[in-house]
Image 1 (cartoon, one colour):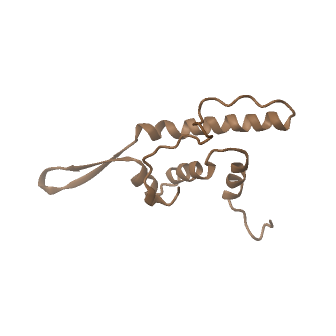
Image 2 (cartoon, one colour):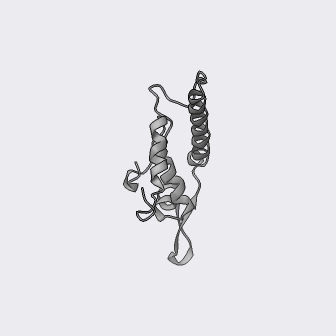
Image 3 (cartoon, rainbow, N blue to C red):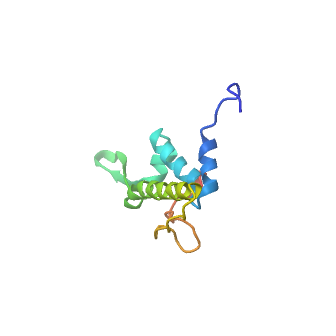
Length: 121
């Protein structure tokens, strides 16, 4: 890679997926969408409530979903655990056992009700 070609921020994100069963790119996409105010993030991933007030005015209230409010920080914590396990292996130690954050079969928790139209699955 040369400086002239630029640097894609997704390169290290995709590289991290080599060392874990976690969907790192998906988690990064969601966090990045919120951080950069992308409409698909706050309109598609927050709880929506349509309100109608006097004189026919309509509003939409967006509020955090309980499952999403804790999901990203927990996934970040689990990813940190994966990083520490990789460090142990590379240092020549036996890896620590994984916690119970993984479902049977190695798939990490991901809320089942993600809107599919967001294109980040």
